[in-house]
Length: 214
Image (cartoon, rainbow, N blue to C red):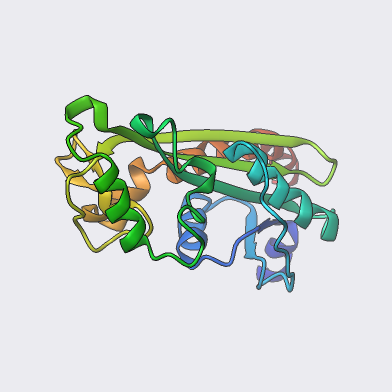
């Protein structure tokens, strides 16, 4: 019975090797007729140059590269980053390679705090953005985008996140993103919100087919 159930499930390849992302997407898609594989699990290697001008463009660059390798699967990819209003949206799409790809996030975070020295209150506004791109086997392209609003903290705090999480302060929670538990963060994070929106879009498309098999 398990094998026939799995044969009814549609394969989603998520273009990442990041285990945190895989755990999050599996949690959000739990109970639905999709089996989700990372690039490694799908036996694929893909590392296209992310030269888009927006998060959405970069997400589609990654999705298109995997779609070319596996056109039979549903392919999903994400691109995300931190945009600081006072710095005209920097680091933005360059979040991972800002100040150089080999520079640690401890250094990146310290530099952002330094650049906002003397800037106060709402002028420190910033947000995480996540774009999720999806390409279906018939070539249909889907996009969702979501944000997590906050401001740049005056000092890093928290051990739970990665990247810029320790310096995005969330006024409504009174703490930085890296101080949230994984469960709390998944509920409000930019990627969590964008993934849930994509899950709804895919379910709308594939629910009829699932009902027909029931």
